Amino acid sequence: MINLKKEKFLIFGGAGFIGESLVAYLKSQEANLLVITRSEKSGNIYKKINIKNKLELQKISDFSVDCCLINLMGGTPNEIVDTGKVIVDAIQASILKPKKYVYLSSMSVYDNETSQLLKEDMSFDWKQPTTYGSAKIFVEKLMEERLRSIVPVVCLRPGRVYGLE
Image 1 (cartoon, rainbow, N blue to C red):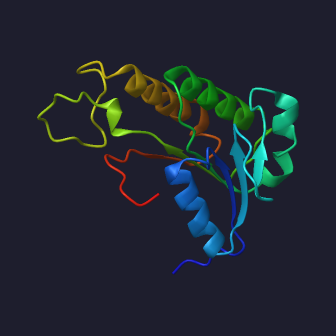
Image 2 (image 1 turned 180 degrees about the vertical axis):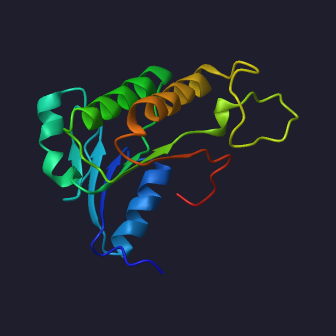
């Protein structure tokens, strides 16, 4: 088992189902956490900030040094794209300085009607996905094009997520 006691995690969007589950696990492992949310949430690890405001992002800059930044932010397609752009811009401008960036995308990047076996290197050009899927693709491509030379990026595309609330 990996010892997470000395690891730092900066989580954007930790108030939803996946985020709360991840936060609970990381807390049980005594990891150092800062969870950014759009809404009020009680607890000293939660911080509500307007991530579009660079001054507010700079308030978490010190924590972001050598952390694992995890972007779980959901919302509308526009909110997904806006959040992705802000995080990528902040990493490029060295406002955020993670050692790794993990992005939670979606299987919605693929057409729902396909009978093809889905592979990691599959092109998105073969059929247009939903608007939500297109927003996720946009952020994936943005990370790939602008961050690969700065920080390792990992993109996860879960198909189904199950669990108790």
